[in-house]
Length: 336
Image 1: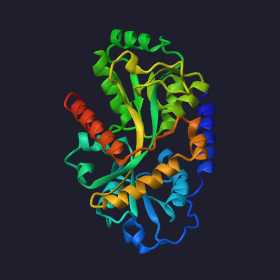
Image 2 (image 1 turned 180 degrees about the vertical axis):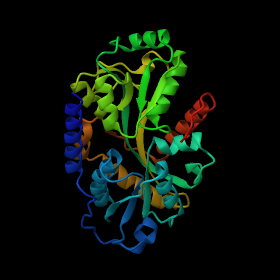
Image 3 (image 1 turned 90 degrees about the horizontal axis):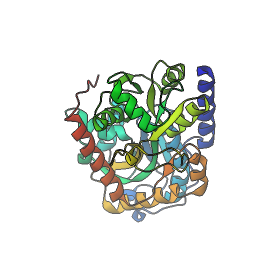
């Protein structure tokens, strides 16, 4: 069963990678120095720094968006993988880059989590050295449990977790991740203890979940669907609203008001980037992620592209940092 899950996940990833392709550099119409993007040369590419190695979910999305964004901006958009330090290396490098619109950073929940739980680490609060370009995509997490777990719905899970304090083993993909912190927040809100079990990769988590070595995980929707195909049970989604892909799976917020944890991505530029350049990049990004072919490509995996103004991304970052700071004051987590 576990091997079947791994094959399923691998097939899905290969399919997404194949669809996404490489960082496309489309033929760019000639632009004059006065036409924006900091007055850069017409053929100078926009580098999109991804804080993870090639092949991961964020990298796949970035490479898929690069193609239509290249067309929208009229110049190549090239993915530049800069992994390490939970995204801090990529974020810091973009913060130090020339603020001319030619170097961007794709942020994840880790950007706000690090700022909240490890504010002493460089580069520090991203709001001080990065400027929002725009929202990119969101994907909910799903509370997914092994098929042998003695509850089939969220209410049953809450009752069991309260009756067996500290016995529910919730896997996560790292200490400073939303999948870990969602479990901490859930335990606080329902008034019990949930025991975290850290892993280094989602594939191993799936194997152990399917075999019953752990009770559950907050899995990204795409991974949750693969796990359900192998017998796992989906109890609730972590975002405030139900997913259209899982209309029969309730949102935790239906039981616990204001519970809203989800995976998100957004593009940032160096803080001193001129507003007209930021607006030009925002327009290009919005046009790219409004492309119906792109949206359809990722729809089945639960990825929702969310065009909008730059301020919408700033509000997400403010809300996320505030929420995680509040949680950090209530729980102690060893970041190592």
